[in-house]
Length: 131
Image 1 (cartoon, rainbow, N blue to C red):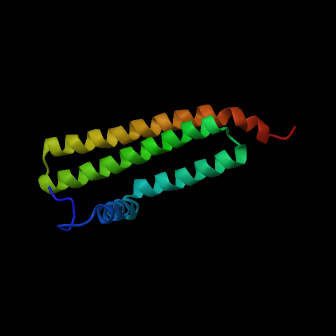
Image 2 (cartoon, rainbow, N blue to C red):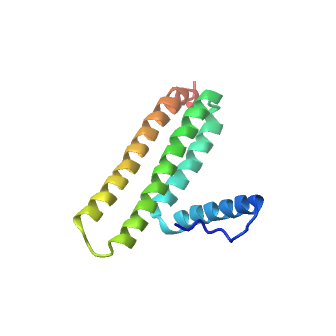
Image 3 (spheres, rainbow, N blue to C red):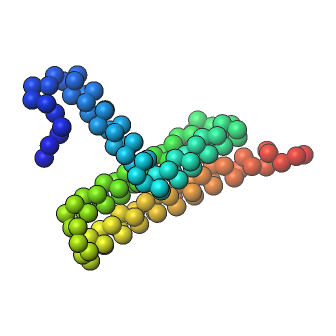
């Protein structure tokens, strides 16, 4: 298992290198995955909605957790797909099952995030209506 470290690299340099690899991974996720770009747009929409509606700090915690859950699931799904494609370039039922399960986990995360979003934002919507 390679951790991309140069031999003898100092601790601070390893930390900077680790962050560089992490940001490279986020960039690859956004460049290569259409669903990640959809999640990005949804994330921006949720942030704008939260600012416009003036949600509370606790509500921001719930929204941030929900958004983070979806991003983590999408990242892990993409990583699983990459590893499965590498390990099983030919069509195989177990490879397909692994990909389906990972995609299902993203769907579950997105549904939970939608429920949390509804619980947070719906009570604020009447404030937008003219009185």
